[in-house]
Length: 274
Image 1: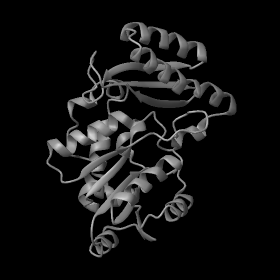
Image 2: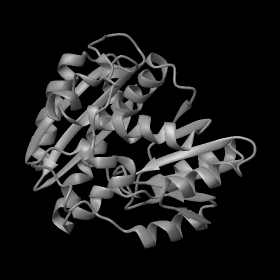
Image 3: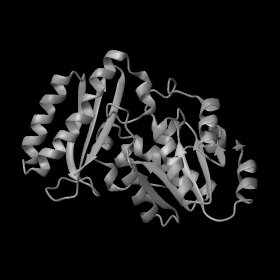
Image 4: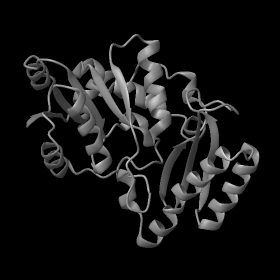
């Protein structure tokens, strides 16, 4: 497998690629959810390249940039075993020359609610780095997990709004044996915190079933907030039912239930379709 760390190495490799190229953007600390992205890319593209870059532009000063897990050697082994052809692993200077993180890309309105309210810096950093990755790698398709559902919608709007010739493909959430959505941050959880964390998906799936049975969004949300508090989460940033595409308030299907909660120092997000 090709390990590419400079633009010269990436450009030379890109020149050898024939057929379709799929990109799997990651921040490393890879798990089976990332491997599902590689598998989807492998099935749909002739060549697969994964990127590993912990993007400082999407972390606020009080967030976990310095402690975010970095496991490059282990990640490379996982990608190779999954059939990835190359890894683009630039340093900060390669991604942001001269420490210049300015960008002309503005996130679409779908970025404003939910995560946008609680992490107002986040999506500007996401579209900054993803647009740079698209420009550098020049993929035909890019694969993103539905766990970061709002991020997926933001990127889909970005390629449409800026006429970027990349097909953005969402891949379903991968969950562990207890239904917890896989995340690089799950490794922060203690054994006791994990027992609380697994209630999140159960509550969201229960919400979806109640909505299918005709209960009102208002009643379902109220019940879910009480259940999240009873389960032991330290705080709830949001638990919302929104239009699946626009993330605006809606009573029409398809809907998406999205939640962000905190246990100790760990923030977890999850979502379920209706």
